[in-house]
Length: 274
Image (cartoon, rainbow, N blue to C red; front, side):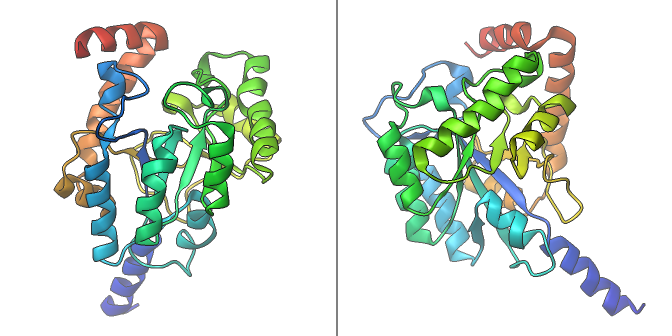
């Protein structure tokens, strides 16, 4: 194979790899956040910050996709170059009143993973608002029933958090729910088995990496966009540049979680972030 052909083949493989961006709540001026803890607020992106990020995608001609779009098109040979998947966790009200209009204006799609029992709670969407979000054409995924760490649960708990949550969401929106994201990124073989049996087509975690044609759809990595993610850093994430820095930090946190366990790790993290 000629060097030119090899370069073209390598370029095509790169184009078929997609970064999945993970957002949570957007901070809207004059509006209280769902929670005030430092560990939560570091995942809250300002509305102006999000708008700048999506505007950049639009300006440079990048495509914002849902998880389903990415699996159907962008991770196959017929993908559009320069695409990212945009995902939100939890089901905050800012999904509808802030993120959705910004995305629509830029011609971007997204997947909103909903925690079922959060619906109607302070700062989160009501069922009517969730139906409105779905009616706008955005993809609705599931983020469990109660946001429990799935790797801590027994078989009955996994059924409730994964299978029963799917059924409730489908009843609320009147559409199939085919994609699942794991609270806190906690995932193992038991979680994947239950998700497959429930009829999901994908499971997303918090592994920092690009997803490509060879990626298992039940092992989709995502990269959290944080409050402190500046525009230049956001651009680098979209291009999958320097991901090793984020991966290194995640490996340290992952080791701490294994040693301490989820509960003790969370208490220690909350103390350090105060």
